[in-house]
Image (cartoon, rainbow over all chains, first blue to last red):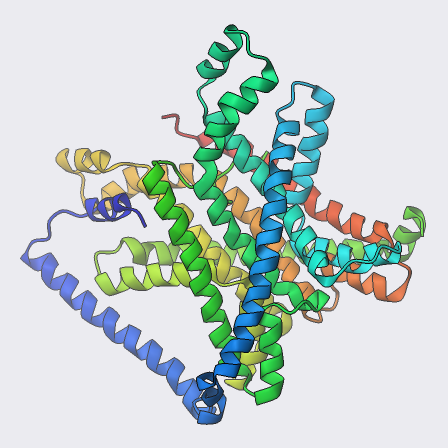
Length: 281
Length: 219
């Protein structure tokens, strides 16, 4: 939520007169009551089904519980950061192939990018989990998770990088060529450094998608936070409370990542190119 | 197993699986759009608690992992005596997540309009309803075409979550593991499903781009 979101929201309305102000107050009261009723209804559900019983929540006061969840979280971060790093490299490579002057090369990379962007990460994870071992290639559960996630992310990142390259004014490239720099040197020295700066906030926000993708770790039985939560559930027989707590932790982490990307975007004066804002074809 | 043998054995199931994926995608997308509209109205309303609730909703559901939400729906809700069948859970999960992103798309569509236009509209005497009808909504919808196209593709990819619950008939991702448990899978069964997804995404992209070219506002 940037500052202009608020202003645009407020710009829709004139300064309220006494009548409107009264209506807004009434609306606010009704909305507040409805909101409280909603929360109460949810709490009531928990209460009548006995989910508030201390046995379901007590173990969250133990250090061992958090220790275990945090070690899972560490696993989540390891996979997410590894996959993110691989995706960064692959993303740049795919993007360079995509914008190649050679028609054959650019078509091939376009198909590769569209393929990885158009396929669910779960399908790729099944590919690494079921198909790769059948060809006699042994892989740890860590890589069975990190590689497919990085592949799906790299397709998206390639397009993000391309948007960054396009954002560098064409005149700069022409100027660099005219003073005798080679195409490769222009890309390396002039365009890429600026393009990367443009897309840093988008890269950070893309980390959210990667973190979300790691939650299917149980498919390959890699101990991430959700997988460790399942073990806690069998130990304490507290399914509802554990799943809700874990969901909240994920929400907070991803929220923090998003806020970080907004912060960086504001500081560097760039825009976040999100997964939903790039050109699909 | 060759492609011909695979398709003669499982071709019908692939067709069915593709239809299941498409059906879940369309149903989820329509639900998500409707919900996104409601959430967006709440977020731009002058009533503070509704705005806060809308913002909160978006932050929660754009940040929650789909798997986590699906698990809550499938395993936790029955403990609270709310029982939904498997497909309903997948659709509910997809709708909740996609509506948060949909509302963000609408909001950025509204934000591109600019305060000046609203002020201009008001100064020539348009009422609030007229401003919405003639100035805000047409522009917001036009600039939301491309993001909403991408959202449709994202919705399709999210329905792959259905492979985590027993579904009969399975959808494209679930079918791959189904075939793998029954016969020697290899790369082909996976590839056929992948082509189903990527091909659909490609078509959606083409249609979306065409609509966008027609209605885009050049600034």
